[in-house]
Length: 77
Image 1 (cartoon, rainbow, N blue to C red):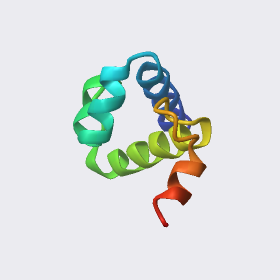
Image 2: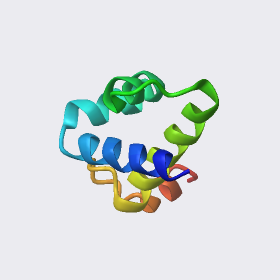
Image 3: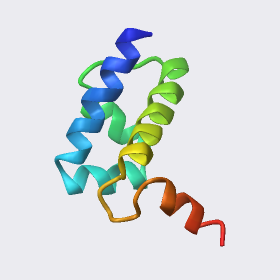
């Protein structure tokens, strides 16, 4: 599990530092994670990694001004 957390943190840092990666992640999360991870992620773990990256970006604000959770709530209305 620590390896997955490490991969998530690494990917989040890369996405936060590169607006193009953020856009790519929003468009195709799995493909972007595969490209940024630098390691082969088994299909069973891929869902966990993508979900972890999404959660971390939402908690931190994802860099596009939606404020993380605020953006999620706005989409409900």
